[in-house]
Image (cartoon, rainbow, N blue to C red; front, side, top):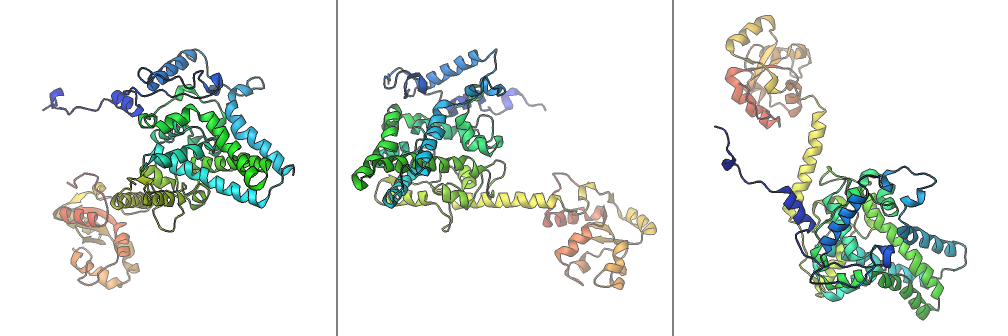
Length: 488
């Protein structure tokens, strides 16, 4: 009887589901920042909380870009030439990520600004503040909601996260959610399939193709007043916390304003940016994949050392709302420790963890996939579903032309070429020819090993009709799949 439309279960509307995932169903606050047209907006603080929708703004910009490039190729789709090379580059990021660090390295390596030990120690401490604000704040708190934090801790993350010069919480969190939603696709902002350099820095330094624009729901981010405040005033907050504050502190503490600016500011920012970039590059390139190998994220302790524990990236992509990246006591994850300690003093709460059962399931499933791949390269004997089924009369007819047949567990085996190799001796195997030797094989004479079963499986020629059930049970115990087929 054919299925009717009324009989079918209602399917999820994919268009509506994607609208929900992108947050396009919500009237969220539009929060903008910048330096006029350089940052893509002229109004930095003029926000209409009642009427202005962040998603409406994004949809409008999307349509403008589609109309603009409908009949012409975007610069990212054009070959590089001597005339257009400058159009391929994102010049703001070139200044922030390449230009300013190069100036810092010039002053440091030329000896024009000597490095004193007290400034070095201060720079390391300030580096840690910025690093943990990115990993514990930008990443695990805001991007993944792996725990909740009270406003003093969120404000701390917002200030010192800006000191790392990696964009605002809103921008960073939105990009990262898109990365998780579209991992290893053209819509992934730092698509690892495009190479180590691209996923590390290239994606920031090149003009993105608007054709692959994507979005994720960030209504929860714009609902946070600290996120809104930091995003609107990101440029002055970033300039002060990244460069001016460390210089002033070094001036006050060590009478070394320039040293604080170069080492505590510029080169510290360079170091923390490069460490964070490793999460997008090395963590998708170096290491193993104990939980899932369908995508590029990997676990590696070297990357963890560089990134405050973010190197256990295969685990993170499988269990993104877990406040931990490292789950074993000996794995390096200072971010996890910081979050846990902050919870003890009441600054954070609702620390989320996936159940150990779910984690163990992921490990076992991946182990099984690896075993199955190894198994597929071995000769396990002809599958039962490909063997002919003989009744007793057919078996007796075949014995006349091939006396080397033996039945074990309902399966006929041709042992003619193995008689002289049998470890138990020729006379023992000759006594079983033309007979059912199941009991003798399975402990009546010898309780044969797995290796014996595997060797025997390579000699299969048929299944006896009366032994179909026994053969199927034997195949199941051995881990063979009948692929939903019956032997007869």
